Length: 410
Image (cartoon, rainbow, N blue to C red):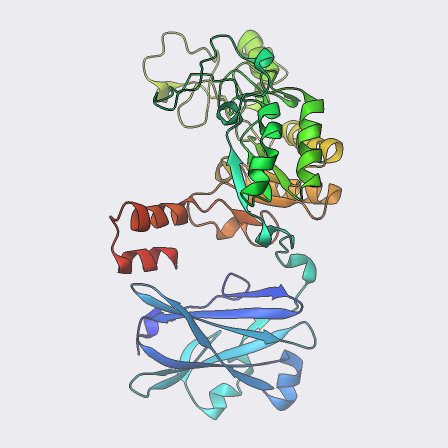
C-alpha cells in the first residue's frame, strides 16, 4: 500500500456540508492500489460512550493518471461528526487513516478518540449554497458589439457592415447593441437558451468594454437604461436569467478617477484608488510597458488596476454591484479577473449582493485551481476554461490522448 498517496483534509473539498444535512466525505489514494475503503463515523460525544455508530463503504468516483478518488455521502443527527477511514489494498493489507495519519488496523486504534477526523459543528451558513435555478440554466454568452445591430442610430463613427468573410480587427466596430439582443429573443428562446451572459455593457471607449469609464451608465453605443430594462423584462418573461460582467479589477484610463490622478498627481483625491508606484503616472516616452509607474491588467496601460482594499474603492464598487440588482433586477454577476482581487473584497461583495437578492448567482473568472474562492464565502462557481480547453483539444482538435483527457477533466 502506497501510504504517501493517501490524502484527506477536513473542512475542504474533501469533507463538506452538501445540502439537506448531508455530508460528502472524500479521500485520495494511489491509482489501482486500494480495493475497498470503509468510513467509520458517528457523533464525537456518543463516540466517548459507544465508539463509532455506523460504517459505510466508499465508492471510487473517478481515477486520473496517478490517483483514485473515493466518496461517500453520510447524514448526522446532531450537526457534528467524527470519522475514520479503513483502507484495504489489493494485496490484503489493511490500515486505519485519520487525524494522526496511517495506523495499524486494531480495535485499540479504532476506538482511540484522537485518531478520528472531526467536523466539530456543521453550520448551514458556512455551506456553499448555489441557487437552485443555476444547474438547469443553458447559458448563451453575448459579446454585445458583435451580436446584432438593432438601432443603427447608435452606431459608433466608422461602423463597418458585417461581412463573415472578413476577420474583424480588435479595434473594429460593427454596431451591435442591446436592441439587437432584444430583436433576437425568439431566436435565443428557440435554441433553448435560459440564461444570457452579457460581456461588459457599461460606458467605455473600446469595442470589448473591459476598460470601464462609468459603471453606472450603459455605453451610449449599446443603448440606454430603459433599453436594458426592456431586455431584462423580456428575458424574464421568457424564463431567461440575465448575467452582467463586473470588471472590478481595473478601470479605464478615460475614467473620471484616473484622469484626475493624471492631472493632479500626488494631490489627487483618487491617488489611493490605484496601485501607483511613482509619480507622475505618465506613459509618454515609455519604451517598455514593464516600466509603467502603476499597476495595470497585464501590461495594458489603459487599464489601471484598482486598489480594492481601499475602503472608498470597495464602497464604490459594492454600490455598483447592488445598483444593477436593485434597479434592474439582474440575476447574476460574472466577475472578470476575479483571481487578481483580494479575498476580503469578494467576501464583502458576496454579503452585499446576496443581501439584495439571496437567489443571485456569483460566477468568478479563475483559470486555475480555484478552491480558495469556493469555500462558501465568496463565489458559487468559477469559469472553468481549463475544462473547455480540454474538451476542445480532445473532441475538436484531436490533439490530446484519452488518458490525458480523463486525467484533466477529473
